[in-house]
Image 1 (cartoon, rainbow, N blue to C red):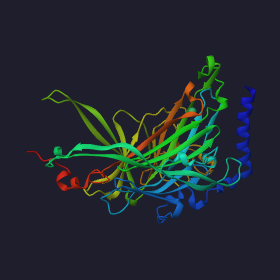
Image 2 (cartoon, helix red, strand yellow; image 1 turned 90 degrees about the vertical axis):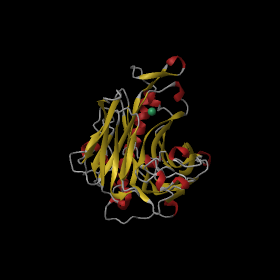
Image 3 (cartoon, rainbow, N blue to C red; image 1 turned 180 degrees about the vertical axis):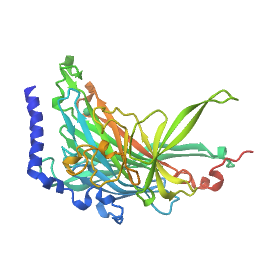
Image 4 (cartoon, rainbow, N blue to C red; image 1 turned 30 degrees about the vertical axis):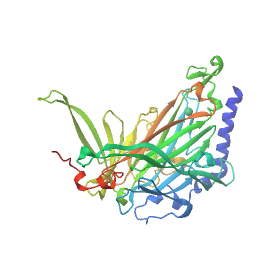
Length: 445
Ligand SMILES: [Cu+2]
């Protein structure tokens, strides 16, 4: 037990040592022009990335995704200039100016430790190589990274760019919409998948983004590796017995993963954020069934929001419409989450703040930006939203199982961004059905 504690101290000392040695230099490891916020300056021309920094993929359904990527010493995988071009669009549609992790916070249930894996452990410096066999059908790209922690700069072949099947894209009978003779249409969907691997202590994190042929973006963080050796000391009833007769007890802990999304829909940073809630609305007097009504709330000021039954949010473009004349928007699909309620910056599911360059991390921000506010709960302080930045918090309370050894099976947490009125019809609609007579009305005989 004592050795375990010492190991934890050793780990911490190593990190503190690195910080002391690198000091301000460590912060300069992110060139000023490449700091996460800097690329988001409204006046900056779109810096096109080229060569290995660019990802372009046309999926079998005809959708092309384009983006730039890099490995940040702190944030790990950073994607920027993300555009979506489905088959019937003549130009790429910008979606996100930048998308990346904003923090991984890991507090232990006995209050003995709490880690900020981005700002303190410098996630990006823990980049791990990815074997070709772990990037099936794709290519592994290299990048320069310092570390881990105290190590010298090295080249890591650590970004996988590949495609994966996602199952049914659709299945339908065209007779329903009046095509004669009717046909059965079906297709299997595909994703462009981009991921990197980073180690923090004994944990290995998979930072993954899926870009689907239907315009959906899925962000997910996987945690694998091994339960930290410090974990096997939960004698105080704040863990779960693992191993023979439960002699070792794995200490329970929380993984709060926060992402930072800087939307640039249709090429403009100016966006609106809306919240929708569906509520019961009495009974239909004629038929006797229950009625529901959906209401919209325009979020004009910075806010921290929580999931609720029948609630969702969307980011709406200010000056970009689809061919039906509807403003383009992207809906946040936030799935189940265990929030860590002890921190104001992990207590809510979604935070929306007015853009500020120095507001880079969801917590522990002052380690990187000493003259800025410390965390996302403080960023949300009542300012008007003209240039919103969306912070998504997804928590997972990890109560270990026997099956978590060894290596620990990946546990995932994440969310999705789903297009709403970005195109006039499904981007995957077969060409013969992509016609005015099948858009917006169904012929009746
Ligand atoms: Cu865990």
